[in-house]
Structures are given as C-alpha cells and as structure tokens.
Length: 79
Image 1 (cartoon, rainbow, N blue to C red):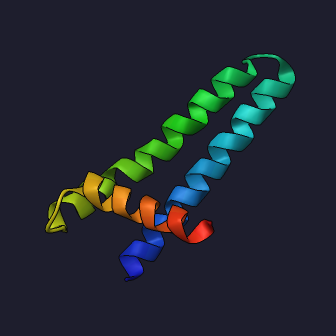
Image 2 (image 1 turned 120 degrees about the vertical axis):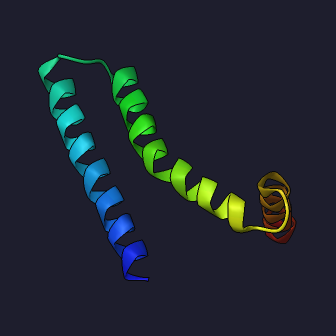
C-alpha cells in the first residue's frame, strides 16, 4: 500500500512540475497552448499506462469489457 501511495504522490508531483514549467513557457511565448495540452497528455499517460498494464494482467477478463460495463452502468444511473 505504501508503494501505491508513493507512486501516486510521485505521479502528481511530476505532473504538477511539468504543468508549471509548460505554463511558464506558454506565458513567455516559447510554446503554444496545443503543445501544453500535448505535453500534459504525455505526462499523464506515462503514469496511467503502467497501472493499466498491471491491472490488465491481474484481471480475469479483458479490460475493455470491464470499462464498457463500468461506463454503461454509470450512464444508466444518471438518467
């Protein structure tokens, strides 16, 4: 559990530092806003993909089916 907490804190810190640096560059005119969005998408995906791969190996069924069932059940409750 401590390893999971450390992973989440590291991911949040890395993403925050990346966002602050990209926002400063955006303010200085070094990069454009679409580049900021691309950098943030890459930074977030660096931490999401390993977790997704780990849970995919430990689950009994395909992850796509699980996500579709989760989304479908949430959308039915919202009505």
